[in-house]
Length: 468
Image 1 (cartoon, rainbow, N blue to C red):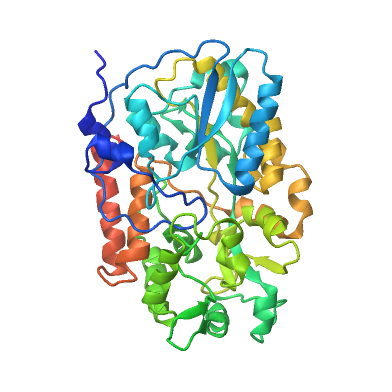
Image 2: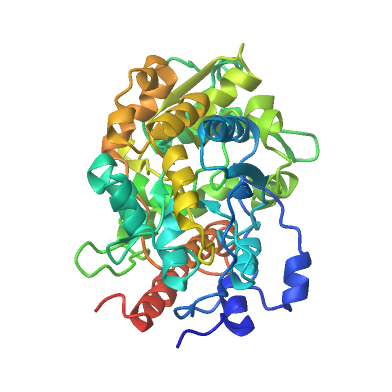
């Protein structure tokens, strides 16, 4: 017999050792594009959840909530897609956009987990796609396999990695939405002012170091007033560093996590040796200044000129048009140890899911299949310059018309994706802590930090029967 999700198990999933009352009262800070501060503690590996309390079905004519962390251009586009859906919907139900802030330093969402555990989930939830296997394993997302088959939504319509991330044990738990790739952005005006040639961007990491030395600007007190780059800001995650050095994060045969791959260790040793260029106190001060949404939108330090270069994604193309239409920017593949490293790019992206316990699954699926279908997806991706996960939609000439965005489209065939495992958010939190705290501050060596990640996650996977 299925039992209600216990408070103890719920707190395990959220990773917060506090009372449910305190948890519900916390107001997480939104950080959709700024990096998250390292989490001070890590949650114990979860066990599979029992079914949450069932919510009442949404009667015809009521409003269905769609929860999302989107802000700026993405939020504007999504609201317009919802308006289009509502105008076309003949079933009586309407969808409303609901913004929820993401917990800083984590990919978990206590508000969603509270709602599911209490039997009051939304109809639709916007999920970072690599976390879908975890939410499915924990019992927080609804199996929508039957609805997908009935609607003719199938794997062959999507990029394989996107569909794989949205499934768990051959069951569909979300529909892929957008994807993206990563490259090096640079401000041509700032670069030229420093006496560098913006038409000859660096090809190797050593070349890039020389650029950064000239682009870092310090005030009289030694504080950086302009960053040539930041080695763990925006999209410079541990994954990015590892792929720059041709590292791997999961064994293709055993499925074990391999953060301690020798090339990943080399990448982290290189980063640590480079940190004195800025001073770790300057790097920390920048992250602190940009906590939450402080540096989002027009306040992004790349748009204000406080950053000369940045590792970021294709979504910045639309932001440039909105916030700096007269700016002069370049985009190139990230430099590697021996030359350009297009293989350093990885493809992330988002999805839409129906949380467990929302009983009117057909109507909820009707909405997510619209927003993740050709019409909704194309509007969103054209508005935001994200890349469609639908293979046919991605062939639209629009996505390569802008020369900046074409760079990101060209990176798609060589981009990687994060390991789709049922402990994705725990793995994410651990890599953030290693990258932004343990390694730069010297509390662990790169080898020890990465080995500890492997040990923790592989034990969780072993205990969950993932390798059987």
